[in-house]
Amino acid sequence: METLELKRIASQVRRDIVRMVSAVNSGHPGGSLGCTDFLTVLYFDAMNHNASNFSMDAIGEDVFYLSNGHISPVWYSVLARAGYFPAAELGTFRKMSARLQGHPSTDKKLPGIRMASGSLGQGLSNALGTCQTKKLNGDKSIVYTLHGDGELQEGQIWEAAMYASANKVDNIISTIDYNGRQIDGDVEDVLSLGNLSQKWQAFGWEVLSVDGHDIDALKSTLAKAKSMTGNGKPIMIIMKTEMGQGVDFMVGSHKWHGVAPNAEQLEIALNQLEETLGDY
Amino acid sequence: MIEIEVLGNKDTRSGFGEGLLEVGKINKDVVALCADLTGSLKMDAFLKEFPERFFQIGIAEANMIGMAAGMTIGGKIPYTGTFANFSTGRVYDQIRQSVAYSKKNVKICASHAGLTLGEDGATHQILEDIGMMKMLPNMTVIVPCDFNQTKQATIAIADYDSPVYLRFGRPVMPIFVKPDAKFVIGKADTILEGADVTIIACGHLVWKSIEAAKVLEAQGISVELINMHTIKPLDKEAILKSVAKTRCVVTAEEHMINGGLGDSVAQVLIQNDLVPQEYVGVNDSFGESGTPMELMTKYGIDTQNVVDAALKVIQRKK
Image 1 (cartoon, each protein chain N blue to C red):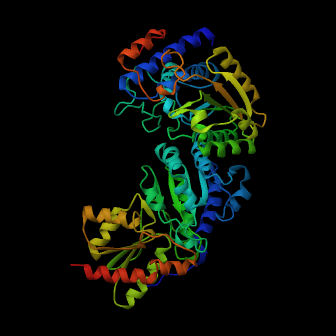
Image 2 (image 1 turned 180 degrees about the vertical axis):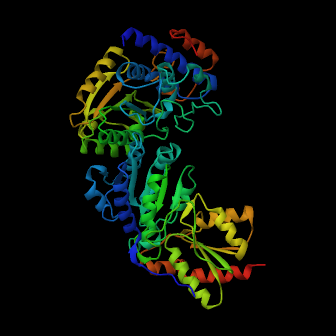
């Protein structure tokens, strides 16, 4: 898809995010805004998927796992705008009986979601399982994941990282939202990840880096990653991002990790985000 | 005169190993994952026959459970294998989110459950696993009683589209379920019909209860023995039908009294037909090293404990 069009979609997704969390005065806008450009490019440019006829088994389709499930607002908005369910349903986010639970779940059968996430560190393992099933089925599709950088403090991530390279799982493209922030502050201060790129390389992964807000770079990096699949190694893309990207008073601070803007703040935010596809 | 034919002596984990091989032949979607305990879980035969469907995960149980859940996307039926301790407590959150809440068709197969793991001691002797697993919504909990039944259950769960916890063990015990018996999930087996007391048991305690029934018979007490191999969903009808006749219950399990089979039975009785119940189980204690049979005696889950509980509960009948 053309870069200009992807930017228009991303702008609308950002509007959706701040409106969704503000409406229920809860949810996670910071990481959602930071991953908007990536998820827009993933769903509208990179992935082979069928939004109009969601299939849990995803035979012949690419699969995406959101391992850092708390940034559900961006995923829900992208899924809706891609056609998995009506955009109007975004207005039910975090409300009783809604399919759009606070964290993603399969429980209420929201199209587009294949695994619950929220308790961190599990998505990479889930993805590797699907990778192995695809190999058994002779299905050449790709499995994508997204992880928070803080999430990498979970031990299960490294169990999975070790498994993937040791077993030559080469139909996976994982990504990290490397914004350097987590709830208690900077990742560097809470529990440093050290040299992240070298860590993944040491675990046997091909590592790519990209500016997570440069749509062209995201397109080309994902295309490059796809071309590297099937070569015996798992692939990791480290995306340099800013928490709260797109809203000046949110950008670059951990303070908006799990805090929703009030009505006044919402107004300021929406003035910075062009309505391109029509608000839900 | 109680006559239960003993068909041989084997460990229930070997029943799992044979069942896994068999179900692998019947159902091409069955895959197996193991966390470095292939020999202990008797998964070698499956590995040899279906190497491409066997996944060695290494000592990384959290990754194993997560991968098993992910493998269901695309139609596989994953069986995970490790000790009961590492199958449950170590990975409770992974099971909760990726398997139970996400309602994935994963079969968590757990060996070396309970005290009868023996000499390795309390670090490995989990006695809380039935409780943990039965509390999870969407989870089915099965504790077969002998080699044949474990094999039958291993095969049966492949056709049951649900998360399943299948618990079995290490010691060699008598085989008494017929090799051609049909295993029905959620339907209890009445092993003995009797009039004076109902004993409801699972796992290795079913055999101990057969022994107890013989001792009680010699004292003129007629025992109705129910093998409650499925703890969830629980066969309430079988319980209520039996107590309508006997008016008292003993539950017997190789598990904590707190949260096990006995508590599930008590819930049914309290809400439907309040008759006296006595528990045979481990009473809020960790185990220790020893031979399986020594430990069963020391921790109060042996034949004599079932006998004593039966005599006591009969006294409590109004």
